[in-house]
Image (cartoon, rainbow, N blue to C red):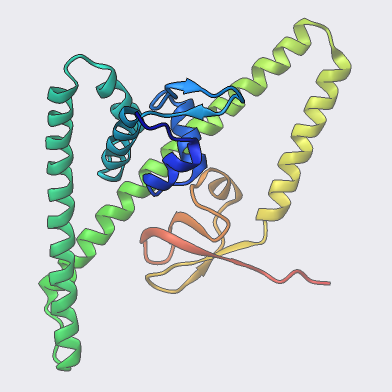
Length: 242
């Protein structure tokens, strides 16, 4: 029976050593034995199992689903159901992509022919893009609100603990640091302006809206006050006066 080191297993499965180690920590792969020097050694059965895990992962299944499936006595049946559901999901995504490609092709043909673009094609494309953007925006916004809520709750609990424990100096430092952090954030965001991608208008939202909106250092999910379009707006910074 062959024995493989972590590096050899990674090479045979075309993944990195860190991936093998990560899957090991997640309980998806355990070495058959340890060498005298403490090196982790894997068997042919371990290799086949890891190849299956990598294949299932490439199909889009989560590590949790794979782990639970492999640990079950009905692993084959569960895996079949999982793959059936994954097939439905991928089929749905393929259908959506094909519709988008068809709409793109229609618009390109009309642009090339210099004729008017069919209104129904524009509406279809807008609906697809708007639906995906809204879903993504709501999901990210919900995650931001949950994270902010958890952070705020933990902060209040910590302050309450400091107060109950009568650690007044710690409470004073915590409040000072929190206030300073909010002040710095407000200072950084106060000059923030956004450009609407639909009407290209530039607007400055209220500071509270910027604080609680989802996005990144380059984009914010906002409603344009000029045209009412809700989408990812591009952040632009005003030049500070010297």
